[in-house]
Image (cartoon, rainbow, N blue to C red; front, side):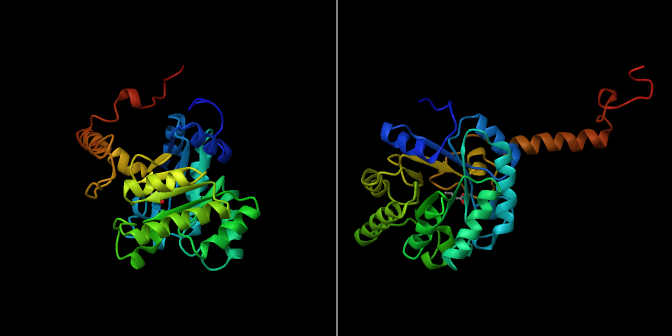
Length: 274
Ligand code: KIV
């Protein structure tokens, strides 16, 4: 099995873990980028509720809703052929009742998602069981769960104390038993993520969780250098696209103002094509 052949499915991700093949996951929110990163061979494309931050400029992910997530899911799904498309279930779309969760997850699947992601454990386990029973694949998310930012007291490193590490492992095992096909581990010590990864049959996807996870995820805008925020320790910036965009747009502004653009080659004339 190679990284570039065949549609990625939840079964295939499990097989990749068994074979020790790393899983590459990246967020996308629109058709254009989804198509580019799918063609690059990214295995899992996450329509993250981080759209709240990088698309809408919201301070937290608590304020993005189902309607926005449905729009972004439709756009991304239109551009993807190979990767598995996973959509985040936004805040309040799955917490109120398992029935509401099934309805909202179903709407995301109708919009083109092939799986959904939910944050947390505890009462979320019943939701996961219900979704899986209805044939909706679920990715879990533990460690720093941004929808619980106010409860957690900020975006800090999780599972530092032994009792928190035990809780994380117990929650991870419970999510696996409830039927999750993969688990995101966000901002936890690398050693702790390593232990969880070795104890689970399902793949772990890390973000700020060290190199021992079965796969990695980043927010696309962070990787491309499109965000203004100070760089987080766990982000590796592979390009400086905001500089590229600034240079291109500044040149465009200057050429329009000077009359250099549009030139004859960008214009239509009445006697053309005769
Ligand atoms: O919303 C998101 O982008 C996420 C990833 C960072 C895991 O949940």
